[in-house]
Image 1 (cartoon, rainbow, N blue to C red):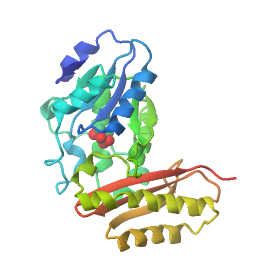
Image 2: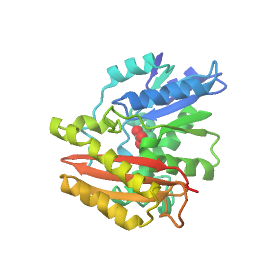
Image 3: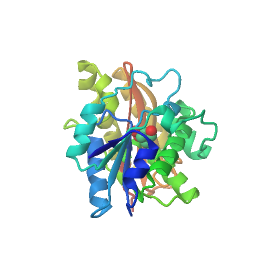
Length: 282
Ligand code: PAF
C-alpha cells in the first residue's frame, strides 16, 4: 500500500489506472469504514486500485464544533487500511487540497440539505459537497462508497453526482453496529463509560418507532414526539427524530411509502446520529 500526501503524487500513482474505487474518510477509522473499503475492493474489479482518503475537512465544521479535537490517528488508520485491501491512502494537507481560500463552493438544494442535519449544522453539506467534489477531482474514481450511517450525506452526494453528471457510481455501505446495537461512529470514542452504556437507547428508540409504523400506525408526528420524549426522559437532548421518505427525505405523504427514520441527539457532550430504513408497505 502506498501513502501519498499530495494531489500531484496521487495523480502520478494513478497514472494508467483504468478504473479506481474510492472511499473518502476523515480518519479515526472503525469497522464501519473498513467494511466500506472491503466493499470498494470487491466492487472495484481485478486490477482496479482502491484509494481511501484521510482528510479532516475544516469546511464542514462550524466554529464551535470539534475540528481541532477530532482524533487524528494516522498510523493506526494506515495499518487498518492496508489490512483491508486499500492500495493507496491519500492524506493531503489542507494547503494541498485548499491552496487558496475556497470561495467556490457546492451548494446543495435547501430542500435536501437545509433540513435535519443541515438545520442543526448550517453549511455542513456545503462543506461536505465541496470537499467530496475536490476529492473526486483528485482521485477521479469510477466508483465511490459512502456509508448509510450518514444517510442524508449519502442522499446529498447522490444528488450532486446526478446533477453535475459526475462519472462516478455511488455505492451505499450498510451501517455497522456494535453487539448492543449502537451504530459505529468515530465520535463514539467521546462517550464516557456510563454514556456508552446508555448510547444503544438511540437505536432502540428508532427500532420501536419503526415497529409502530410497521404495525400500521401513521400518526407520524406523535410517534416522533414520543421517541424524542422517551430519549429526553433518559437524559438525552434530541435535535430531531423524524420519519422521512427514503426517496427525497421529505415527510411521508401517503401510507406505504418506503421510509427512513433519522435521528440526532446529544448524550452529554457527544452528538450521535443514527437511522433505520423501513421497507415500503403494501
Ligand atoms: O463522512 C465523512 O467522513 C465525511 O463527511 C467525508 C465524506 C469524508 C467528507 O469529508
